[in-house]
Length: 357
Image 1 (tube, rainbow, N blue to C red):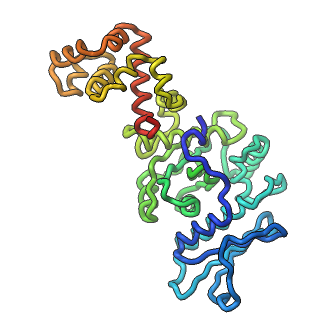
Image 2 (cartoon, rainbow, N blue to C red):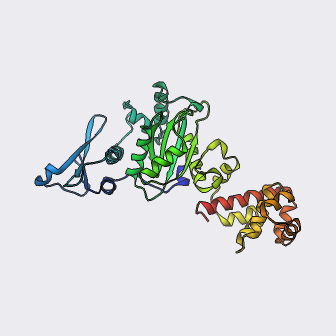
């Protein structure tokens, strides 16, 4: 499973969309003008008479001006610190949208960090080696990728602004490395003692952002780039959002069997083939039998423990088990079928909680 399996698709944000998102964040009119022969603006044309009320923010890439963001300040109040962060995020989005190629000569910190997740493996490896050489990152478990799954109503501009804001919190030695399909990604060290769940959730709430789940993962020993760790962090974030036992955050190393289940595609037809017993329980309108069987299997078929969790008498539990569909009773009597049933029930729960069923 990769990032594309757990989040909604998104291409590089177009300039008009960046202008719209920034305008929504600032509650002001915004236009993005691209420089060059093929330039086209983002929709707002500033008149000479209004130039005094315009804030022009240049966008440079590798020292070359590529665009300018114009903000109509009008007679409104002065821009706040968070609004300047949104402008900074829009500049970053514009730079990324207009970047034609990775450019191996780019050695500034922002370009190196962005290239840590580049589609080209050689670019990713070069960026990772450079970041390690500069001691921005450490190899293997010395680095942690953090993924923040944020409510879909939040714009890319506001997501990036939030991600960049987190990197300026102290004492948090973390770096913003990108926004991939709506997921904010940071990278830092395992000892980020200041980066607590409470701090992150409070900072998000203060900005009107709802974090659905936070996931972390470290590169394997000897890994030459950050791609796999970032993907694992995103999967962990999606499970933290979906499953109460992992909310609000979880490291990929703590997922256990849920990591295996997360890689399965949601296909009820395939479920019927894999475990007819699980499909039979899922197909019933009343899920009381499914809850009974799942709880019974969770405790290793321990009747006393199951009764305690279900708040029923032993006789009641035996009665429920005896009245199960035949295909389910047969699965409970077979070792492999019983294990498959248990995993399939967890898979159903994961699909339901993530909206795939």
